[in-house]
Length: 466
Image (cartoon, rainbow, N blue to C red; front, side, top):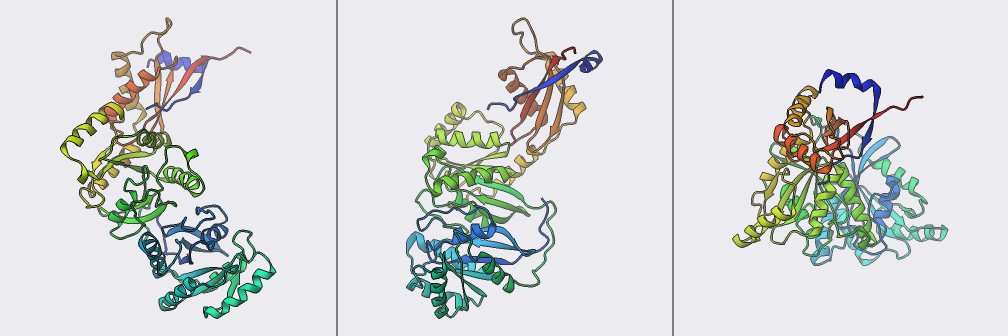
């Protein structure tokens, strides 16, 4: 850019054109933990939403919607605490539901206070009695929430729950809010007075979301990373509904991994709790810094896989491609996969990891890929260095002449990182092919590995004389 070009800035205004290319404060203390438990379909998630004051937990009028233990930040009367929603608890459950029940037991073991939810319209069942025996052995303060007490008659029915021997039952209507304040006061009264303190982590843990289509192995990978059965895993697609956060120490650092529900082909194809789960998955992507997209290496790349990757790029998040189930891939499949990647996947800048969540093979390589993506996501190019590069590039490869005019790049700057955004001041519209060329050369020169680059234009236009 010449001095004459700079002098012209005062005579023109720049109009921004659309732009993206096609293709942590630490925690100072451990707050008290309140676990919400009960048998299936008594309204635990509805009560959690009532306490939080927003629709955070997935709710539907069928049992078994919540499968994992899911933590939320809550506050009452100036006291912060962690509220843990759990799946339906049946101590005698078998198979898949037994693992859901195990998550509820783990939540009780880790809690400071337990809220035991019952349905007053049904009363105490044999399952409730079995849960009571387990709660007594746990030795934790228990608050009995007599849910679905929507009127005075419901409050009278709640009085019968004194027979459980867990203290005063608190009638509440999670759906309508009746009695929720009194319930929170009861929880407040038994919260630990002096929460344990810990040293704040510098910058806070980085947030990494695990996404992919259903049954690709996201929950298995989180369990492998956490070193425990943190989330329920089953061969049935759609086991995870709520996003599940887990702090995991890997490579000497603490990371916040977010397991999400499988993204279906179209959100409109989902119904009930699956629809809301898909919305929460999108929200989890938005609050993540890096997204690990899991792909089934043993299956051909699908349109669904490509759309999920595109969603992450459009959200402006760091990207890592993890090909799971590599232990099931033979030499012939590996050759076909490489051809599929060359033909279908145009994103060459994302780090790739081949791994097996089931056996743990190469899972340790995921940290290196995530760190690479984070570094690219936060890369900033000084303005002088960027313009020196653009000057050399445009001189060697100018924009093609279109309609007798040749758009020029007058100036460039990077106003933001996370994701990196490049703003180009131009004399005309830069075609998408040329912008993709610019992106490739920017990556060759400055890196940006694992991160999308947003390129926008401000096109010079003459100001109207008044």
